[in-house]
Image (tube, rainbow, N blue to C red; front, side, top):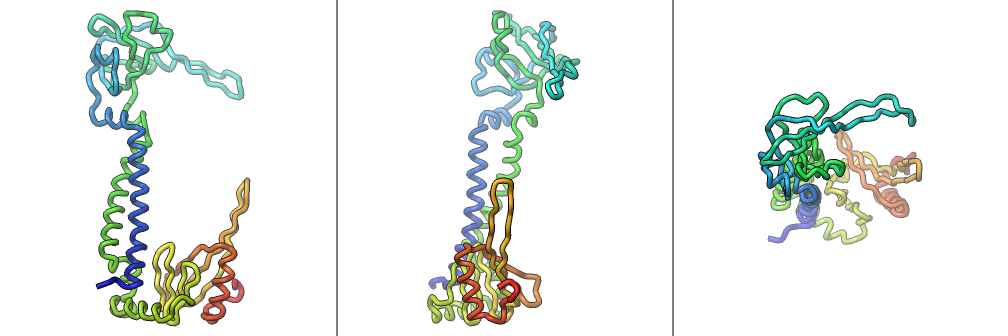
Amino acid sequence: MKDGIILCAARDSAKSTVNLAIVFIVLCLIVLGFNWRYVYNLFSGPVPLTAALATDPGAREFVTVEGKLIPTGATQQTTLKFKGLKIDESKSADYMMLALDGRFVVVKVPANFTGNTVQGRLEELPEELKSTPLFYPWMVVEIDYRIHTNLFVWLTALVLPLALVLLAFGLWRVAKPQNTWAIRRLKSYGSPHLVMAAIDAELSAQGGPGKVLPITFAPSWLIVWEPCLIIFARNEIAGITLERRVKTSASKTTVKHVINFKVKGRNLAAEVEVKEEDAARVMQYVREQYPDTVDQTNA
C-alpha cells in the first residue's frame, strides 16, 4: 500500500536526522584521518625504543625508554615577558642522554626530572645537537602523550559514538515513520492512521491554494513541513505572528523573519524562518483565511 502525503513527509523529516548524523560521522572520520598517526600510536603504544626506531621511526612516535640519564649540558630556557619587558627567565627542560646499542639517545625532560624511565613522543633532534655522530637523529620528549598530543581526537572520540547512535535512531525513524514525534502526536486527535487519512484526503481535495512556502493552511489542519514536520488542528491554533529578529555584530546587522505558531492550552509552539518578501505573503494569507489567529499588534 502506497504511503500517504503525511507519512511520506514524516519519513522525509526523519531523513534530516540521518543526514545530520552522516555529517557528524564524516567530520569525525576526517579528523581521525588527518590524525591517523596519533590514533595509531594511541592504540599501539607506547613501544620500547630501539636503535631502529631512534634512527627511522616511520609512523611510530609514542615510545618508552629506560636507562641511566646523563646530562648533556644543554637546557631549554623559558622567558616571561610583559609588553616587551623581560620579567623572568627560567630553565624549563633539560636535554639528557642515555646509552642504546653503542650510541646515545637524547631525551628532553622537564626541569628537575627524576627517574630512569622516560615515556613520550619521538621528535627530530635539534640542529645544534645533530652534529654529534654519537647521537641518534631522533630524541624522546617526555610528555603525557595520551592527553597532550591532540585534544581534537578525544573530542571526536566522544562525538562519534553519539553520531552513530543518532544515525541508528534516524534510520529507525525512516523505516518506521509512524513512530516520529509528529505522527505520534496525532493520537491526541484520534487514531493516527485515521487522522492521517483525513488530512491526506483534505490536502488532495484542496490542491495547491493552501500551500504557502513550507506551510500548508488547510480548512481543518495547519501543517508545517520544514524544518521538521508539525501538524496542528485548525481549531487549536491560538495565534500566528510575524517576528522580526535583529542581530547586530561589529561588521553587519542581520534581520530574520520568523512566523510563530501558538497552540491553545498547550505548552507547544513552532516557528518557521522565511525570507522578508515571503513573510508578507504568509501573513496576508493568514489574515484572509485564519483571521482569528492574527495578533494585530504583530501582523
